[in-house]
Length: 314
Image (cartoon, rainbow, N blue to C red; front, side, top):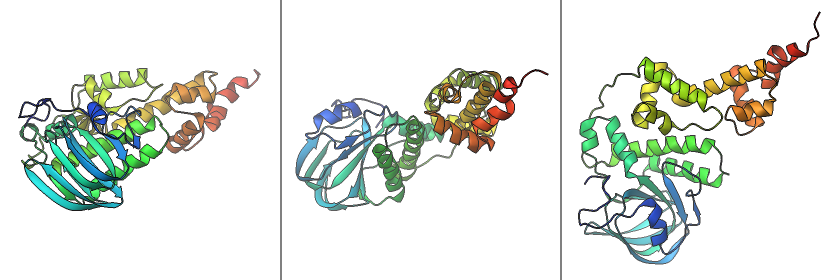
């Protein structure tokens, strides 16, 4: 099955992540749909005592993780009927393209909707043979500690107030979850990783210029990868291989360097410097500045900039 098709083998249109929320009879208790996350979408649902529903095939992979509770559930997929008890810490995995029927009771469930493109990109990271041979297996129930840990991270972020840093956290967790699905649940196994050349000088310069031009906002891994036409899975590895630092670390280095320049050479207030270099507020800026330089922005200003400008001429 080609994961990126929107039509199932039976000719039925596959339902998207955006559409499924309107097909389900209940709205989620909480959702990440209004967070602007580009990776995994999380919908949290309350327990249900009288579930009896058939859903059309999806264009994405569904992981249903149970954070709490216990319930007896009958699942039907791909001509197989499975009856079992779903309890806290358990997950089930429904690949894209499967019509599904659910009957019985459902406990509290976190529905992690994984775009098929994420898993396909993870396959590309492993080489052309792996990219061509990706088919996620149907799993009616499992206790997978890695899925549980990543689901709990996403749920913890859902409980937090929206923050620009969430895009970075969710991006990394989504990539890790897709890679784990490919490693643990790919029906065709894993091909060996190809050895890829590093990024060239022109590509590093293009990325650096882009970062410098956009330091006043959050910069995502996917948009940096698009500058050199590779997947974000490739990009993170290639960038570190070529520069010795992760893309996120590089961006923050450039933010701090810009901040030092603004403090030393202009009369910009520290609050304005924080915003101009992409930090959410002055407190966050101060913590990161101190972590990377060993001193506070105010101390740096007194030593290298504002104190010297205020010094009267001899």
